[in-house]
Length: 148
Image 1 (cartoon, rainbow, N blue to C red):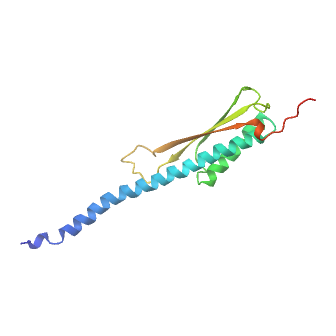
Image 2: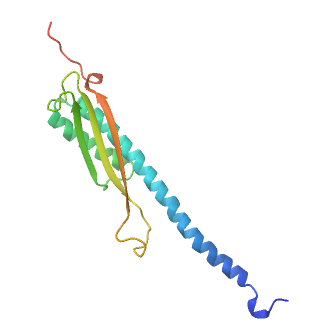
Image 3: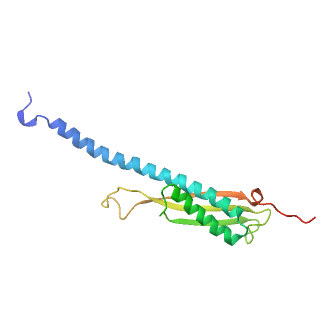
């Protein structure tokens, strides 16, 4: 026999339990989507930066163009204000990347802020670091004049 004061307590317990489980699940789903968006952005940024560097006439303008297109690729994914670290390495001629047989490697690193996490659970805003690398042989995009 059910006592009168315990009636409908299962409904209240179910609602509270549902809220306690649903809120972390929503945060997890939103965080996964943010990280995936950042992953797409950093991969596109590395690909575009490698191509822009290779198409530039020299190394100095190549670095400027690479950073500009990397920032645009991140902005296209909604990460316009995300921090960006971009560096370029070249082999076998590290001081002259636009030499005919060079291979350019562009490294891009950024981070995504995970939203909706209460300050009680983390100090400051938690971030997820992302990086991508693109390797481009310079001869793929540049025509080389050879002496006859």
